[in-house]
Length: 151
Image (cartoon, rainbow, N blue to C red):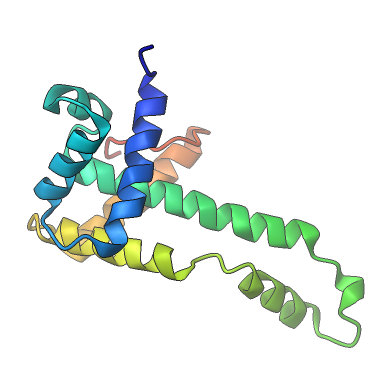
């Protein structure tokens, strides 16, 4: 049965998430490996991720969403009554930190994303600016899915 666009996108992002922490090759080599593993032609892969950096931005979006979910969960389950005598800002800060919004794997992936993007000649400031602009434009439109065009 033919996979939907969203299913294929999610599968490739998950595979990239697994490979990125230990990937030591170039960004084009990573996308070639992901295409091979996913059984996609270059054309099919490019319908999901028009450029190699679009893949990195999609993975980054998923990492940010996971981070936000962890923080939301910690905030929703926070009970100020369970912290008598503690300043509220200290108690909530500790609860949010215990949620581990960015674990070691996430930090490693973010580092590799920036290294791979920089290997394409992009300055790290441009990569961060692009990612933040994408997140903000996506949020402004009420989208939860990554928007892969720069606003």
